[in-house]
Image (cartoon, rainbow, N blue to C red; front, side):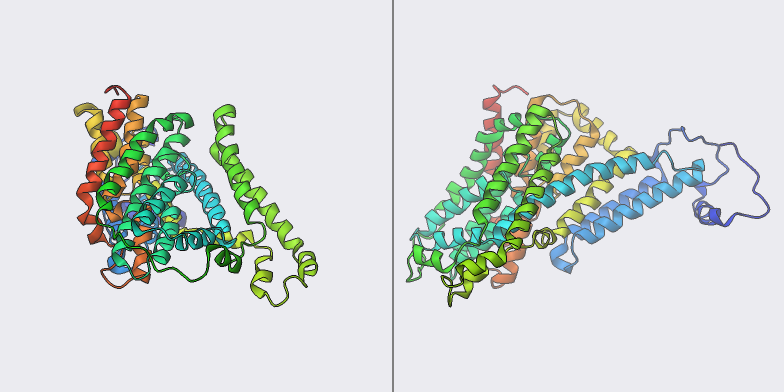
Length: 497
């Protein structure tokens, strides 16, 4: 757009744009530019604003425990401020920001698929919790007369297996609740078992795109096919077993105090709600359809998940509509057993949807939109040039994995994907592994760790149970497992990437 003389009367629609331009002389209309002109915004005032806002937003989000401000708030605000700055700049410099809108929309589309995927996954988890399935599991563990060391391994293995099909961030919260119940009066066991569950959840979530945010991104962008993630199975097992074996000797040899009731009578007093088995069946069917439709039909993963959500909604509708008939048929049988009657009622699936972790979902919105701006401004390309050309890609991927101990791995993976590195399958596997398990190095490095920390804070005395300090004390053992898993992946691939 060639320079024009200003009209005598300024249109009110352009007043805000003009004011912004006058405040920033480097963005004034005196410069000749076209909509297709390439501007290096990395060394521009707009770029500096974006970096400053990003650092402040992440600093506030990472110190959530200090100021009790949820991590989503600074991230959402920060992303909005950066995008507004970019749009206003383009309106000032080029007279239009139409070229920027598709960039914003592409990042929003990527987030929308993640949002729906996590929402459906958490809805199934909340439905199984509401139907009493995990309470039944807790009761069985409480009354099987397992020792603390056995429970340490059992809860770890359950966390590992569950996180392959359920988001690891929700598995952390679930296992933390179970560990708190079975470890009453034993803060040392609760702390070690909680730490073990966090490491296990992160390791298990790395094997499958269904269990981790970073793995989901790699799958979503078709960098790895679903079956290619299986190559990470043994390295992830090593990552879980190595620190667990070291912690094992610090766990008490004793046995928890059990209730006088037998496991069978406990389960009878805690009746599984009607439809619980069907919820499990629909969840397994949903996971199967999601994987198979992606592998054989190349359908986006969210298609299968939304089909499963629809089936769950119809089950909830059936259970609710058949509630009165069922009560009539069992009224005599359930006489004076109000808990049994309550267990036969239908359930509202939308309450389960409302119970998802909205703070985490909004955090990822802010994080992904901020990463999108850094990519658009050119910072990620500059970083990619250094990481993947100036130094070894293998070393860079290990370094990125170590960084995930303090920065969310999903955000880091989304950033790397926006760098468009020319990786082989082996390098994508290495990056997926290091980012997936690197978050276990610190309590704040992963969603499961943050969830268990929050749970312990509300249910344990200060300094007891799973704490940041306890996790830091065992970091050398976890770091050993981190490098052992990388070495295992090297051995499996014959040392070639």
